[in-house]
Length: 300
Image: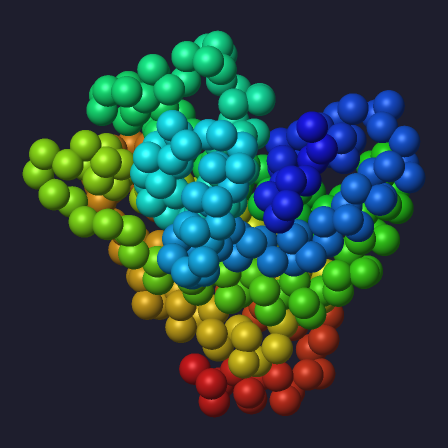
């Protein structure tokens, strides 16, 4: 199966090809694979469209499943895109990739496996974990490009530079600041209802943990962008307002302050946000830029 199916990409497979861990991948293949997904790398998490953002998506899914004689799975497929909170057709593609790459049972037993609510919930959670990993690996690829595009020691630094130059730092900075704002302000889809197997406390905690990991990875990407290309007054002011708005990472939903892992996640976000502020305010390389300093003072 190809790395790309429609508008869904198998990021874990792509990582194995382009990360530099598998050195046997020809440089030209690395370059072309990355250039093919340069838009998705720029879009980041936005490429995963929210459920309901395209009203015709559910109808297209129903039609597609009928054409493929998969009507028995329609009920599960509907619950899946609601559970993942993404576009119905994208959710179906993720399910197909999960079945090819991760599912260990026989394909003809899938309909029986989801016939009970408990087994269905188990499978939904497994696909949730698979989808969450794909999101993180996509962010990891972007961060890897920025970390090593200017490194003479990385085997694919030249190919990375080609991709970064094509996308442009300005486009990356604009996109990932916007994504960070969306992540920080995002609220949990659905409501916590007693007895609801699909929106329970465990799901809320898992969603919050994933959100924090993605926020921190996005912060690292923004820090690298600022390190190499700086940041304008308006964009810095947006970031600083965002950081203050959630108390530099300390305002989180559904997490336990007494949980060591959760406390560590909060500290990581706090440190990452402070690092961005310190790096942006480090004017040692442009000490004469008084207009930037004056602009920041006025904006804040």
